Image (cartoon, rainbow, N blue to C red; front, side, top):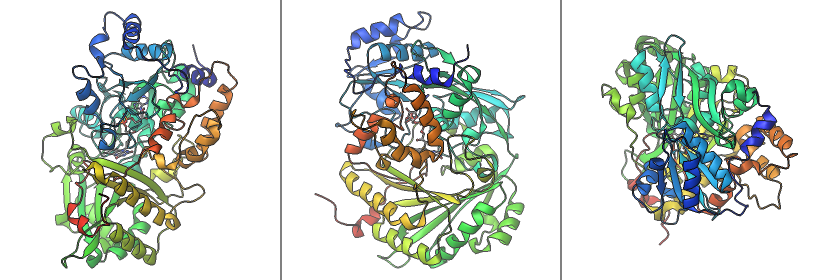
Amino acid sequence: MKYSRTTLVLLLFFVVISESSSALANPETFTQCLTSNSDPKHPISPAVYFAGNGSYSSVLEATIRNLRFNTSNTPKPFLIIAATHETHVQAAVTCGKRHNLQMKIRSGGHDYDGLSYVTYSGKPFFVLDMFNLRSVDVDTASKTAWVQTGAILGEVYYYIWEKSKTLAYPAGVCLTVGVGGHISGGGYGNMMRKYGLAVDNTIDARMVVDVNGKILDRKLMGEDLFWAINGGGGGSYGVVLAYKINLVEVPENVTVFRISRTLEQNVTEIVHRWQQVAPELPDELYIRTIIDVVNGTVSSQKTVRATFIAMFLGDTTTLLSILNWRFPELGLVRSDCTETSWIQSALFWINIQVGSSEKLLLQRIQPVNYLKRKSDYVREPISRTGLESIWKKMIELEIPTMTFSPYGGAMWRISSTATPFPYRAGNLWKIQYAANWREDRLTDRYIELTRELYRFMTPFVSKNPRQSFFNYRDVDLGINSHNGKINSYIEGKHYGKKYFARNFEREKTNEERESASPFLLPLSLLSPIYSSTISAVMAEPSPSSSPQCPPPPPKPYLTSIAPPLPP
Ligand SMILES: Cc1cc2nc3c(=O)[nH]c(=O)nc-3n(C[C@H](O)[C@H](O)[C@H](O)COP(=O)(O)OP(=O)(O)OC[C@H]3O[C@@H](n4cnc5c(N)ncnc54)[C@H](O)[C@@H]3O)c2cc1C
């Protein structure tokens, strides 16, 4: 049976109950429901973890990637279902509805604002954790793979590499990011200029959208829903079980480099030139730059450093000839470059030495910090004077870093309506603002420093609306109170437009159609776009950080000239 978009979104609303409804959590009756709604051949009870019991804490904490959401004050789920079979997902959805509970869906747990495992509504909630559902089935003949959403990107890359040394998938750099949140939120990496985003290479999906646990593929769900879960936030529509992805071709050897330049080494001129060159380079070449503040050569003086990290789908000689012609200001020389396999380049990008075991891609454990992230898009190059003023501000603030990711290539060729991700032609590069820290007492201050840099950047970035990247979830952009007094669409539009621009209206149409239904629950039940959890988190102090993975350590050596800490 083919579902219309209206029916599908409507069915979704049965999945999770509004936080404003009277939620009651009786773990016993809830687990009875789970047992009676799951297949006895795949018992669900070993997958259920009750708060305070056994391995509950270790399961909950295993994929918390932001320590801001792992404090004694963080609201915790009363139960976690770490599904080991698709029928467990179906049972979770069915019983969540029946017991009037909110369900949070977590795959890799990298949501920057913890929306996959935290709610501040005060109502009981449970987490459906997908990390056990992580198969990666690669078919080299068709150059495709079915990937379950609990897989991490490192697993995806590793299992593709096991089967083929010249196939890959153009997704994120951080290997522990989960497929579920990454693809459903857009997903970019160092091949996006050649092949676009992760969502530009997704061709099918399996998803639970129905209170009866119905599983739909692309054909059954229809093109509108398939479009929506490819960048519009999977959790807004149901539980994505797996994506079918297109694999892309890579050469047997690629070239990577990482070099840094400081103020004393003409960083202003180099970054000024980078802005003009990086989006116009051949599609095979992606050069990101990370800007931070470090100790200068003169003691007690700070300087700005730009670190250029590159991925080139080709050999060193070709790379040098391109850059010596187009970007001589960078001063790249052969000894800066490393020619290696694509899979080794994935390790290089997370600061692991080339030549290390590829099995490191399978590691799920990484250092965890307190984080805050924000994002922006730049549509006009920034003048030298502008850059100098930014450096001055960064030296004053010291802590937040910025990462500039160039667009161009496929990112400009793909239509802005092809997926919910709207920021294609006309965008030169994206900024990620980042702060990482290791002590809870620094949280308010580091968040505020990040916000201050973001405010300072206002004249240099996109406007009306100021654009943001959905995968860099940022509750500062707006919240949805779901208090019944304000229309949730109007509230959601305020920040939904920043993430999705005009594509937000296509999602709105879904809601408008459903709103005619007497069965409807608020759209936001699962949705990061509309979620009431957003408002709750917003009420708490939020922090910030950058896209390096694993995140760089905080900079204790800089705190001496930072503003005084609160007691
Ligand atoms: C260290 C680090 C590095 C990063 N690097 C990159 C990068 O290189 N490129 C990039 O694009 N992004 C990057 N990100 C951002 C990342 O892509 C997003 O945070 C993404 O949403 C994380 O997916 P996840 O499954 O790990 O997160 P989760 O926290 O598990 O989920 C994130 C959101 O997706 C929803 N969701 C998760 N699984 C499902 C599912 N199966 N069905 C429906 N909804 C689901 C959740 O409910 C939540 O709202 C990075 C994040 C971190 C912390």
